[in-house]
Image (cartoon, rainbow, N blue to C red; front, side, top):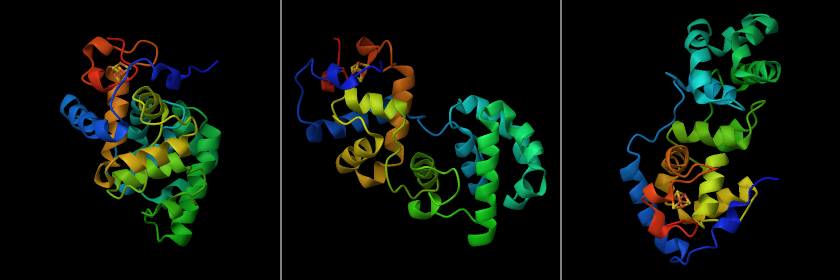
Length: 223
Ligand code: SF4
């Protein structure tokens, strides 16, 4: 059964979340000044493709694949110019390659036909692209400098629950709670801070509370 991180947040008494959110953000910024997207890309198109390929795999794995992929596929038309089997082979190592190739081709077709080959910047437009769900759209919009929501992945969910910033389980509801709490200009950065803190300190199975800069602000702290 999936672990309930909301239950962990009942251990310790802390101030209301509205009072804690500023110091939480400031301390995480100081602790993880390098918190940024781990995918490597040089253009809006490469960003979109990288994020689409990152579903169900690691960023390291995606970077390994895209290093060669982006030499071969430079424009949306390039993804449509090869047989689908060739594209599948080129992205094979990211897993779920058939579905991903189908999504990539559908997206490239729509980009060419409806967006003049450019990547749209509005969330409503991004989610119309085949295979682009809300999380992917949020990541892309944030990296394009126009965050319109807060990305909720497994780390963001776990940390916001442990920190008592949400009592929700559903990613859309968690996102709604976080957007009410976090300043709009920090919507892009905030998930990176939680993701890096989640990878380095607030690890799923064994959170390192004794090393954590948030331990006095966290209702789940074990120290
Ligand atoms: S590692 Fe930090 S954020 Fe995670 S549960 Fe412990 S004190 Fe809370």
